[in-house]
Image (cartoon, rainbow, N blue to C red):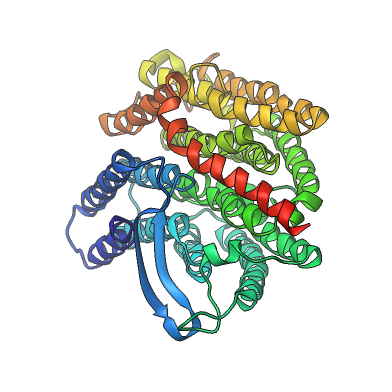
Length: 492
């Protein structure tokens, strides 16, 4: 039942905030998000790695059709539930020095999105997964369209068209799988994801189902060449919405690959998995090279995120336990790092009214706290040993290298390129002479510091003792890989 509270509580809190007319809307939203964080913490500390789906619920939704309102948490989803519960309070806290018009609507949309994300990561029914997958799109669309930059209308329209296009393919695949399931005692078919796993689809069917799912998830991550919506959307959206997009929402695509593609169509993965890895590696290199050339801090971080998610996708399709473990731990680490980096860019923009690197410089002379926090988040992003980024990237690169030495070598350039564009951004913004925009730059306020402190703690916790999180996911990953291998052999 705890999963039900994780989904419904943000909905109730958001609805109450919409009706709130006081001056402390920010504080009310923060308290609501902190309660959700406590619930996620209860899940983490009560989770048993040796058990299957836990804290779940199962109710009839459209009973005559075999569609159920069913959700639970297992070793594949638990870290993403933690990530969603952990990041949202600090994304809300990051807005405390900002003023947004219609604040009740702004914060309610963030909480509605948190509820939808929790639903995606816990759904055990295919159509329920699709419902939450689409529901997460609605709040982010309005956040970007109502509080975004000058080009927000055209950019959000492109984002909406892209994601709806991909989701239609996923819906077609889910409907097809639904009609392949056998009759039950109460319905002609079933939409339970566990029942989809039991299907013995023909190789031809698996191929088209693979592509239907892959296009939907590749757009969400995004993977090359389905990425063109991402940089503009990240730049034009208000920074809290960008944090939600990059920190949590893109993980829906990686999670969808793990949850649906790999176990349902193993022969499709066997046929097309190398193509997916090649596209992912192209995205790694392309995103990193473009990031090096960027002058806008927010756009640079957007391309950096695109490059990093390509490595996650490649690790998942390597079909190795290390690659899968790396993807799960890196989704957690990347969410923390990218939120920290976007907040750095937001802090600098709020004081200088620019994100252009050639208009900055000399900030470090008067900002010891920002300098230290910026550097730590940067080092996590470039995968320095003893930081969170190193653990996931090492496992991912090991998985891809095991799959194919040449692809692994090409993917490894992400570390070199990442150091180039991140250190370049730090040097140009923080060092050198001050400009007219930075000569009176103020250091972090107390609320801004409290956004960074929990993120920094997680950077070192995951980097120094990753076993805390790897032990949680290891049994589920081992069972999944064993299931995929056994199922693929039985289908041939």
